[in-house]
Length: 353
Ligand code: ADP
Ligand code: MG
Image 1 (cartoon, protein in one colour):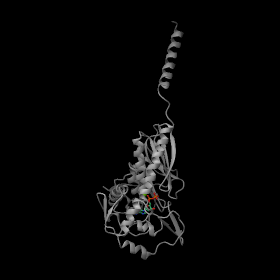
Image 2 (image 1 turned 30 degrees about the horizontal axis):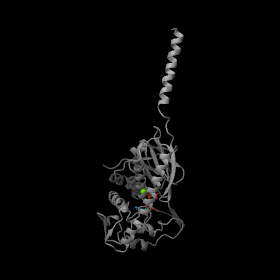
Image 3 (image 1 turned 90 degrees about the horizontal axis):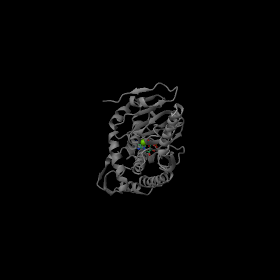
Image 4 (image 1 turned 90 degrees about the vertical axis):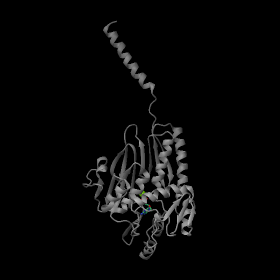
């Protein structure tokens, strides 16, 4: 065999091996995207590595799950939580609670305790007094100080409910449960669990900018945008791979102006008024339930006190923008986040021991 023939033969072999190895494994499946509606917001889901029929099955299952959760946890409409609230208000002291409400009540009690009751889903009456429970956001007169004080004097808090098996013991008719600050996080966690159960290990469930991601996008981390405090534009980018939930609470979500004053929907249970000091708080954590509750709690804690509450809640990746536009964040968040160019120097804060 001549030298040239040998060379040609080995070249053919290399080409065959290369072809063989690429035809031996199927081409990667494209990302599948679908949109759901729940908790008054669109939920965008992206799943990697499954075919279209499986993605369609996932879409149907998730929409069904979200419909159930939405129905079960609506505070102000007839339904399981509506039933619990009506019973508390009517002075029923031992309530046979619908099972769909119990896990969320229990987990909320624990997170509320960790947050020193800054996150407190037992203050539904306050939210209602401020009229933030309704869909429309028109300008209106804020509640009278006397009405707020009268409610605060009754000390409504989720800590006044005691779960006992399938019963809830209640002795304060001023308590009303509103899961607006945690339900979306819990729902996102349930959706991720459901996808994992269906054999999906790379996905993102994005509920209007609050989200949880698992796996990666074909080996590349998911790239998450953090909204700026005004609610528009991107303040920063956060890569999330493997498993991470990113939740933001901001004063831009629901608010109104009256007589030149700005009022938003995150209420400080200590004062009965919208919390002061923070414009937005973003939390990165392994589960969405905790991230959601913590974003609300740290927003209320404000620019001075959030590190203590973060430590108590087991949170170490936080970015808070105060009402002056100053960014405060943990070192661990600083190591991950990519701030928009020309952003003012952030204040790096260590959490207390
Ligand atoms: P977003 O609506 O942007 O997700 P949050 O997760 O912070 O924001 O939830 C805010 C909602 O939670 C309010 O609309 C209200 O229904 C409820 N809420 C307000 N203040 C509190 C509080 N201190 N603790 C628990 N829930 C609250
Ligand atoms: Mg929240």
